[in-house]
Image (tube, rainbow, N blue to C red; front, side, top):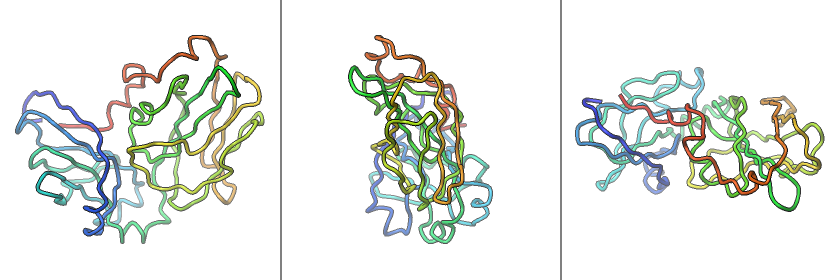
Length: 256
């Protein structure tokens, strides 16, 4: 920041008709940013690349989208967690991949996250909605789309995922049903976030252990999850607002 100011941002849907002719594809959410003129000097946009993938020169850049169309900004620097760009003027900014270089490095995993929401309904079995996502998707964006009776379950979320790899979920004690049986990990940057898996519980256990395995049967993520007994007030509870989410949720876009 060049001066003290209020900064507001929201996420927008990517327009593939702008990205495809340039040989680019979305590598993170598209942020629409408003602030006092000339107050912002740099943006630090979170990425989901591993250290090995960051060795590929030109893999990441930043799309700047305004009424005049799209321009591509080369990073000032790329840290282990963020891509830093100088700000010409505020509008929409988002990380993009070079399609060819991303394709050549499909074998390289990305930093991912597993998000869990417990769903308690008045009728039917209790269920857990599981989201397998890139690390740089804000939790608040996913939580905002959960319906009545949904409660975010805070648990270690970090893991590695590979694009095109098939993944499945196991549950202990055994669940009533897990759907789908397996699914392919794909790039998702909104605007809609649908559960990757749904776990329907046959009983009301206090603790369940959930595991994500790849197509070779290798465990990529595992966590024991405490599930408090459903209560009447829980059934009517809406999704948590931003004040109820962990503090790190609000740091998905950092400005200096």
